[in-house]
Image (cartoon, rainbow, N blue to C red; front, top):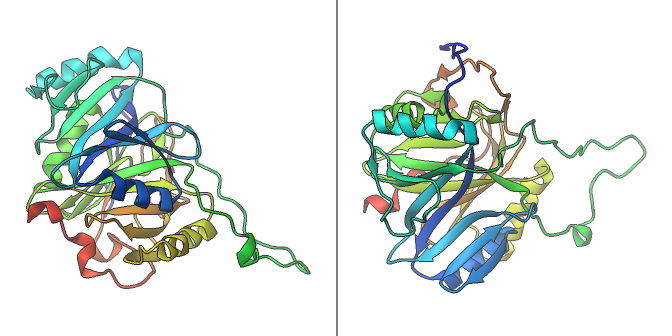
Length: 312
C-alpha cells in the first residue's frame, strides 16, 4: 500500500549528513577495520578522522568505554538555518551546546531517543543526481571480468546513509520530519523506516530499525559497481572480517549490498546503485510487508544482524 508524499511548499530542511561520530573502546582496532574496508583513516591525537575517495571527513571516532553513537552532524543551507532553529524551538527540544564533543558551530540538541545531534550551515555533501554505476556488461568477443591479480582495493566513494536502532520508529520519523525536514521514503510498519532530504538525496539518508533501546546499526558506503560490493566482501574476508550479511539486493532503496560486521557488533555496508530522490520530487512513500523490508535476494539474514549490542 502506498501513501503519497504530497508536494508541499518548501519548508526549512537539512540537505546532507555531514558526518557521524562514534565512541569505541580501542581506536587501533577501529583504525584496522576501517582501513581494511577501504577508507582513509587519519589519527589526530585521540580522534580518528575517516575519509572516502572524495577526501572529505565522513566520520570521527573517539575513545569510550563501549561502542556508541557520539553524535550525528547534518548540514543545511544558510537560508534554512533560522527556520530549522524555529522548528527545534517549537518541538521543545533540549539544546546541548555543553555536551561532550559539541563545538561552537551550529546548533546542538538531543533527539527523541537521547542521541546528540548537530545541525549547521555547510556544503551539500549528499549527491545532487543519481550516482553513476560502472557498466560491467561486456561486449561479444571480449573478456568481461578482470583477473584476480589485477583487482585493486575497493575504496568507497562517499558515505551514503546511516541506520539507528530506536524503541519507537514512528516517533523517530515524526521527530526528524518536524525538526530537520527529513521525509519518509518507505517503511514496514513500526519495524523499519527510511527517510530522505528534500533537496535531493539517496532513497535514505537516515533510517531507523525497531529495538528495545537506542543504538547504532550501520553506516553505508557508496561504491561504483556491483563488482565492488562483492570485491569489498572478499577484501574484508582476507583481512579477517568474515562475519556479515550479503551479497544481495534490497527492495526498499533497491541497492546491492554487503554488510561486514565490525569488532563491536554493528556493521559497515558496501552499497551500490541505491534509488535516488530528486530535489522537490514527491516520492510515493509506502508501508510494505516485512518480507520486502530487508531484501529481494541474497542469503538468509544471520540472527546477529538485527541484534542491538547497546541494549545489553
